[in-house]
Length: 179
View (cartoon, rainbow, N blue to C red):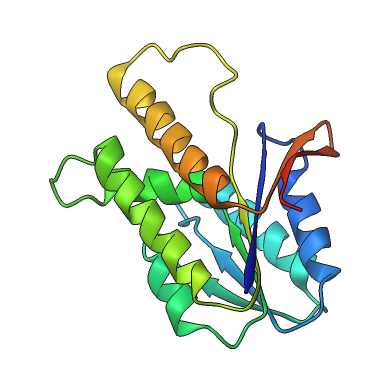
């Protein structure tokens, strides 16, 4: 039976580092699913820095920007899966939607497919995401829509999760834990 862990927090709160350390403390083959596309030179450097952090460890990496459920289904041999991050996944869906309107309901369906793909596994799946609802209301409709979509995705994953951890200033705090 799978354990689902959601790790959230603000930008640069230490959530990815905590997720990686937590995943590395678990036994089993490890899969890192990177959702970030290379969009510019600065992003390329960030991605390289994240890759270097996993160098020398027993991580296998898959870069997938959209089809998380397919990655989970195709890689069942991994007992520990870390998906970093849902925030970029939502961004990628929003901008690769092939002209269709990505509504909260459609995103919730896609998120539930990811959760269902987790349910068919053994081991642990960790998701990293940004907590986007703590800031000011964005000034433009696209930014508000994005915030709403990420918020909906986070709620769906958190509801299904066995554990939810929020990081603040590098300090992880457990928000939810099924016993």
